[in-house]
Length: 217
Image 1 (cartoon, one colour):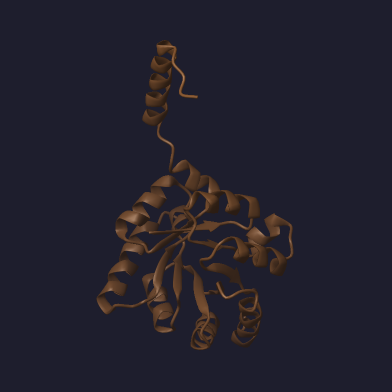
Image 2 (spheres, rainbow, N blue to C red):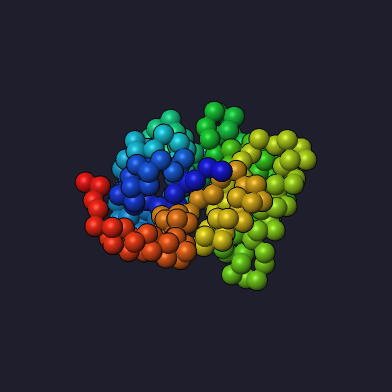
């Protein structure tokens, strides 16, 4: 499973990238706002940190404008994935940009039918939003499972990018079901390393080691 970091925080990306767990980055207008930086500037910096796909999102609503914005974003670096919404115009833009050789991440997916259309339109990635479905008492993980089955039925090359990951359980379930990628905030990725028994065991080891009176260095 590939790990994308869902943030525009350059320092957080650098920390995780240095650990070797980053396969890509996803951004969106809300994350750009939070960073307080110019979209082109910060996106360029991120593409220089990670070698994998960096999703940069268009903000237009009409297909022609999405395509124009997508082309501009794609010029930032070779590893840009243009992010478009799962609307009819977004699917049109996806098809055009894909045929031009650009990676396209179709976002805001909330149904298997939408995911099927995105694959037919040539999307590189489909981003189903798990947490937002959970918020309205729907099963976000079932959507991942449904998309996985449909894509496997027809050997679609579109990669499932589990998004709106809010908990370590979301990460685990997405991996168990077979999502190709997950994108999560840095703090969720870090929490995946935590376990109370690890902390308890380490505490016991260090207590016993202190009693030996020995040093390694």
